[in-house]
Picture 1: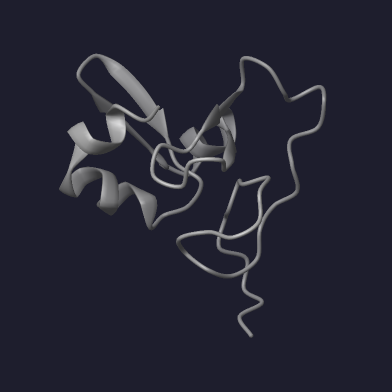
Picture 2: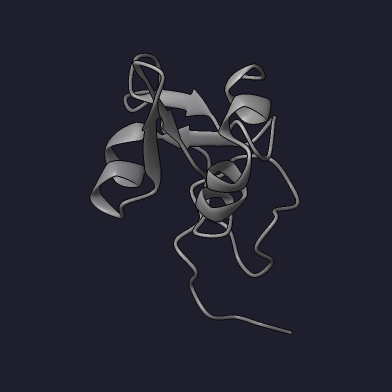
Length: 86
């Protein structure tokens, strides 16, 4: 079992990258500082943490935040597909 911290920022179970997950955002961090990962829909992302880790992309005038490093390349491969789900 992989116990390495992979920088996940998800609140739901399961992830595209495997490994451990960070706890859900605290109520103080919730609200405008959270988003849903467009690749792993249902995964809540803390925007400020994702940005600090480079887990975001700008596409078609909008910013998209990711729950883990594996979601960026998936988004890059077909951004129009994922941008419609955010």
